[in-house]
Amino acid sequence: MGELHQVLTRMFIRFFTSEKSGGMILVVCALISLVLANSPFSAPYLGFWQKEIGGLSLEHWINDALMAVFFLLIGLELERELYSGELSNLKNALLPIFAAIGGMLGPALIHFSLNSGTATQAGMGIPMATDIAFALGALSLLGNRIPVSLKVFIVAYAVIDDLGAIVMIALFYTTDLSVSYLMAALGVLAVLVTLNRLRVMSLVPYLFGGALMWFFVLKSGVHATVAGVALAFAIPFSTIDNDQHSPSHRLEHFLHKPVALFILPIFALANTGITIGGDWMQTALSANSLGISLGLLLGKPIGVTLLCAVAVIFGVCRLPAELDWRHIFGAGLLGGIGFTMSIFITNLAFVGHAELINSSKMAILLASVGAATVGCVWLGIFTKPSSTGAQPNH
Image (cartoon, rainbow, N blue to C red; front, side, top):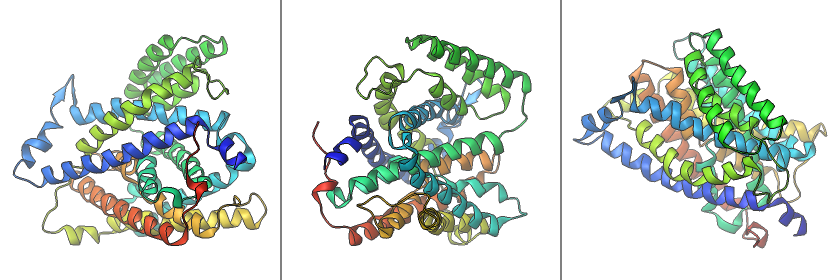
């Protein structure tokens, strides 16, 4: 138990608590949006998100500006994991790294096999993502049936999964690249990194610089949310777990609740207004929708389990003492909850194709609900109540 207490740092407990509560709120907002989009109020509700403010639609501001803050938090969490969390030790990090790679390759290959050479091939990245908030929300329903090491494993591989999604967005969903604006953004980043090296500990210059970098990245054609991740790694970090003076620690702690309780719910309201037409069944069986659904429901657990098995068999890493392969497969099932990141990538993959975006979101929603249900049932059957699943008091 002593080792488990060391693994479950205060930062991880705060992270788990806020993410699982955020997942519950996301469910409610998605349901509200779905109901309104298929009610007599559909037209004004959907039209509301398209209202222009400062030359951009409200939906655009949410997806490019507010979500940049979400990606900033993801970057800060990833930075913490790399410096002082599960990913700071290569031996501990290898298993979730292989899980994340398998969890991205499996779904992508399934979607590609069904859509190769077609107009929907660009949707290959949609089922690759994992929604941390929803996954932890689903996991919390099982309480102390879940080993602590499984919770840590899921958080670690989901964070790496998100990093993969961010890299994919930067590389494959960039339009009309402007080199001058991109160089300006890199110049701002270089200044911020220099401030970091000089140990400037005030958050003010980093936040102002981050806003300027966001503008340049937006104008460059690279998706503006990438600026959030870049900013996170420019902010000074301390490896002391309870160091309240570290800018990274302070900003991560401050952002958790606004992101979980405001930004992601607003994103869900603006992006899950899915209209269900009379041909929804036919649409659900299209190559793109099947690629998304099968990618999340089958590609995730198979990819996660298979690549972890290869890594363990060849002695690259080993399973934690508390876990067996049923736990790893269950973690892969919960990884099929794509929701936030999958919807985000959908908007980038099919710009200007409203019907395709709508049908893709429907597939994401159905597959995510299915993955959450099957994953919880699976882990509920193959795990037993244990005191090791409880969170320690600090």
